[in-house]
Image (cartoon, rainbow, N blue to C red; front, side, top):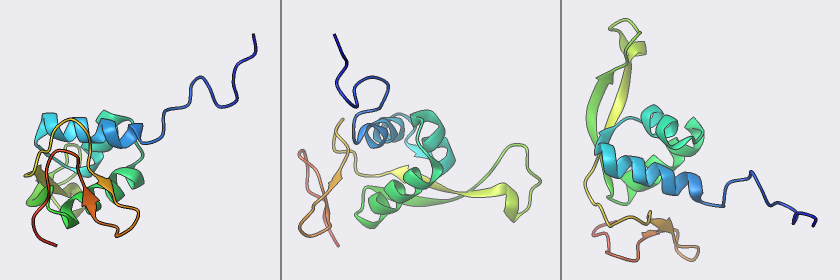
Length: 111
């Protein structure tokens, strides 16, 4: 029997963000490269997702971290983030109408 077009090895749409959200919930404090690595996502995708979550109050900036293997200069430092609004296992998604982050389990205050 022939396989359906697109079936097989491709990840489901949105699964990278689900994996990043799961990693954030486990680590609680992290940087973008850690989230990308643990979720198997690209750095750019992780950066966009983290920026959206910061803008809508799910994450907060928590200073900078030293990256192992670099000298103690600005090149060896990265922004740290902390999960401050955990709304459960499903990641927040962007509303197509207004662009706001929404969740099935809670509402984010502010914005």
